[in-house]
Length: 341
Ligand SMILES: C[S@@+](CC[C@H](N)C(=O)[O-])C[C@H]1O[C@@H](n2cnc3c(N)ncnc32)[C@H](O)[C@@H]1O
Image (tube, rainbow, N blue to C red; front, side, top):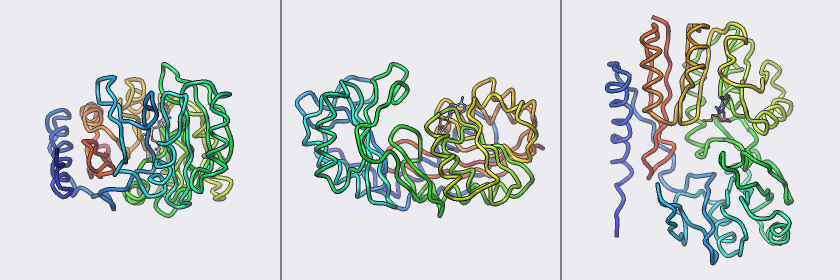
């Protein structure tokens, strides 16, 4: 049996990934703040995706292969998702993948069925919604070459969103667009991000998702503009803004590289996907030259590439803190603040 590394032993290794990326890729010397552990080493995940086994059951796809490993249980899942997993794994599902998104705040789960024919999946969705105390909404999504939830999405019944607590701010989550998978760890990070971002007249948040960080920044800035490409995320953000009554946060559906057209800001915050900033977005940042740049990343290598590039143009890291959002995986999140020298 493979015994995983004890949780406490994983933390210095992950902090080491970030330190090494900073030194070897960004070519910068800077002391890291201590890594922030996840509040829960197991049972932390509020979102997960599985392949559906041809004869039934849920499986992980082994990295870099088409091989599947059938799962009896998934110890990383948070309690509401554990119960949903137990129900969903017993269903005969004529689809390719399932996605679960839960809320720790509400104790409920949304289910996404990916691939197959939505008409054929409708009866099983209805049956699940009628019998499950945990699964409260089901959507179908086309199996799209550009990735999960990039094509058509159709509601099969029940709720489309749930409310989740991210650092004391209740924001909506859906199965088809991004929200952090470890809400308690992420909530701590959003609070620290807003603290180090400080105050000012105007902040622009790029790669904003539904604006969870933006709601935190809106306490310290006169106006926050949240820029996001996903229609579903912006729709959720607009609904959250109305529910929370936050008048000084605005959403702009568009590409992060449009920054230079969006007006001056005291602070620009970025939280890109794993690929990091596009060359056009780096260019736009260098044209805009905000005095403070908050950079949140889920990939230390692309973060260090971008930080190295920005450092050659005068930015210096003032604070770098790794966060462990993903215990028992090799992933690590980085919170950083760069300022103009
Ligand atoms: C890592 S998520 C961060 C979301 C948000 N900051 C949060 O904490 O929930 C990255 C987000 O960037 C969005 N995105 C990806 N490419 C983009 C682009 N070129 N311009 C704007 N947003 C983009 C994705 O849809 C996703 O919501």
